[in-house]
Structures are given as C-alpha cells and as structure tokens.
Length: 230
Ligand code: ZN
Image (cartoon, rainbow, N blue to C red):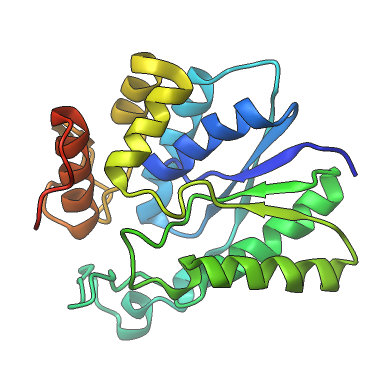
C-alpha cells in the first residue's frame, strides 16, 4: 500500500481546507463524496469548482458514492416533514446519527481498493459538540476497528480536530495564501438549507446554524480577533 491519501470531500469549508492540506502532505490525493439527497446536490456542484481551483499533478480522480439510504433514515424522511428544522442542540432534522461512521467504513473500503494508505477527514470537536461521531476518540477508535476489519494499516487524519473556524481560515491562508482563502470562501458550501445567496463569508441563507458559525468564523479571521460570542 502506497502513501497516497483519500480525502472525504463534501465541498464544505472544512473538507476543502483538508484537500489543500492533503495536497501538501501526500504525493497522490484522491477525493470521495457521498450523494444522499436533493439538498446536498449543491455541495456536490461546489466540489468540482474547488477541485478545479486546486488542480495539481498530485490530484487524482474524484469518486462519488450514491447513498440514498441515508436520506431514508433522516428525521425529515421519517416524519414526512418537508421543512428542515433545527433542534435546540443545533443539529438539523436531516442529520443522521452516526453518519461519519458509515462514511469512514466506505472510505476505508475504497482506500483499500485504491491502494491509498491515508484517509483525511474534516471533522472537528471545537465547533460541533453535538456530533459525537466527529470526536477525536471516535476517529481513533474507528482507525483501530477499520484496521482490524480490513487487516490493513490505514492512518486516519483529522487536521482540523482542534481548530475553530477562524483557525481553519488561517490554515487555508498558510497553505495557499489569499488565493486559496478566496477560492474556499467563494466556492465552498456550508448552509444546511442548500442556499447560495452571496454573503461576505461565502454563499448561504445567513440564518441556519451552519451559516451563523461560518459568518462568525469569517468575521473573526477577517478582523484578526477571537471568535465572538453568539
Ligand atoms: Zn444557511
């Protein structure tokens, strides 16, 4: 197994920064996206623009796996609610418990097939305490489970684990300067509602928790101060 990497690449700010990080760290990088519903098509469209903007001899093929089953077990589908609602803990009703565990199992299988030793994912503990499958302990436990189950020596990397959104913008600047920051600002997508209305910090509805987090992180980065309180 070589020293290439597979990046879980949704087209959001975090995974776009992870792709840039992987292109610095590894000689061969491939990307993986999951298509599991209408609302996420906008993220998938953003992926192509980001990959074009980071084109490099190191950047290999993109893979997209269709996972409609995830849409089938979201609360929105189960309760037949058309509107995406956001619970008190900040999680949207489309959230699927344990989603990253499914993503990692499929990513590991693909990495094994492609001869890629490293898997890079943009999860972090700093901003989304409501997502237990984004925690450092979960990622470390999954690495052990996947290596036992595949009889492999895959290495999971979560370079954003302890960075907040301001620090993630700062990492993008370190990796590719203003040009990379602008590419990610313009072409990455975070909004839970799938909207792309232009904002100073990118595109989005401006009201959902993902937009709020992104707006505050951008403001903190742009002004050089700490993340302001909500
Ligand atoms: Zn939004």
